[in-house]
Image (cartoon, rainbow, N blue to C red; front, side):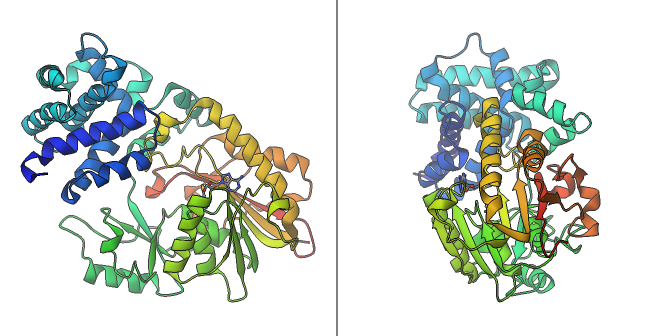
Length: 456
Ligand SMILES: C[S@@+](CC[C@H](N)C(=O)[O-])C[C@H]1O[C@@H](n2cnc3c(N)ncnc32)[C@H](O)[C@@H]1O
C-alpha cells in the first residue's frame, strides 16, 4: 500500500475494528490484532488511537450520528455507521485537522467498497462541523456519560457519592505503568537507566507517581506516554514488566507475612504470578493454574523472560480434584474472572460487550472458586481475593456470602502499608481502589486469614 493512500486505509481499518466490536461482539484486542496485520506499521498507533477513542466515546458519537442521519442505515451497512463514528471522533476529540479528517474518512468509504456512501459520510461530517457541538449536546444518560444504561444504574446504586468519578476515570486514558523486577534491579537504578536510554519525548516526563516511593508501590514506574515494550531498556532481559500499579498491590499484600507454598488460582497471563515470584523468598514455590490453556502459554512466556519458574497447570481451579496433589498451600491468590469494570479505561470494549446478566453469573463463579479453594489453605494461611471490578455484587457481597458460611475465615483489615490508606475505600468487606484515583486502575482486595496455629 502506498503511503499516499494510508490515511484513508487506516480510517477504513478503524471502522472495521469498531464494527467488529460494536456490531459483532468481538473483543477489541482480537479485532485490532487482525487489523494490525493489514496496516502499515507506521500507521498502527493512529489505528489504535482511532479505534480506542471511537469505542471510548461510543454512545455520544452514535447519538450525534443518529441526529445527523435522516434514517438509520441497514444492518448490512453497519460498518458505515462505524466509519461515521470514527469521523465524528476525529472532529470532536482528536487533533487531526478537520478538513483532513473529513476527506480521509469519506475516502475510506470507498476503501470499504461502499463508494455509494461517500456522499452521505461527507454530508454528515460537514453538517456536524457546520452545526457545531454546542447546538447538539446529548440528552440521554448513555450519550452524556458514554456508558450503557445498566452499568450507569449499577454504579449509581453501588457508589452514590462516587459514580461520576468512576465514569470519568473509565472514560480517561490510562497511563503505562511498569513493574521493576526487584530480583534483577532496583527501581531507582532502573529509572536512571530509563532516563538515559529511553529519554522522554518533549513534554513526556517519565517519573514515578507521587506514591511510587511508598511501601506497596515500590516497584512501580509510571511513564507519561505509552511506548512499545521493545523501546523499554532491559525488557527482553526481564528487568521490567508492564502492569498497572494497582495490580502491583496484590503480591506484597499476600506475602506481607511471608509464605512459601503459594497458589495463584487464576494466573493468566501471569502478571501477579511473576510479581509473587519476584518478591518471594528462595524457598518459595508457586503453582499457577488457569482454565484457559491458550492464555496459560503466556504465563510460561512471561516467566521465562523474567527468569522465574513455577508449576503451571491448565485446569479449572474450582475442581481441585482434577489438579491438586493434596498438599496444603499457605498462601492463595484468587484474581477472579470478573466484569472488568475497574479497567474500562484500558479496555473500552468492556462497556459494549458486557451484559447486566453477566454480573450474577460472575458472582456465582467467584463464590464457587472461593468455596472450592478454601479447603486447600493451611490453618494459619492467608487468601487474597482480588477483582478488577467496581461492582459490589462481584466484590464485598461475594466475600460476605462466603464468610457467612465459613466461620474459620477472618478478614485481615490492616492494609499492607499505611501509605495506601487514602486511596482505599473501605467496603462492608474488603477494600476498593476506584479507577483513575492516583492514575490507578480500579481494583478490589479482600484478605482472608484462616484461623489456626499461626494466627492464634
Ligand atoms: C483477571 S484474569 C487473571 C489475571 C492474572 N492473575 C494476572 O495478573 O495476569 C482471570 C483469569 O481467570 C481465568 N479463569 C476463569 N475461570 C477460571 C477457573 N474456573 N479456573 C481457573 N482459571 C479461571 C481466566 O482464564 C483469566 O485468565
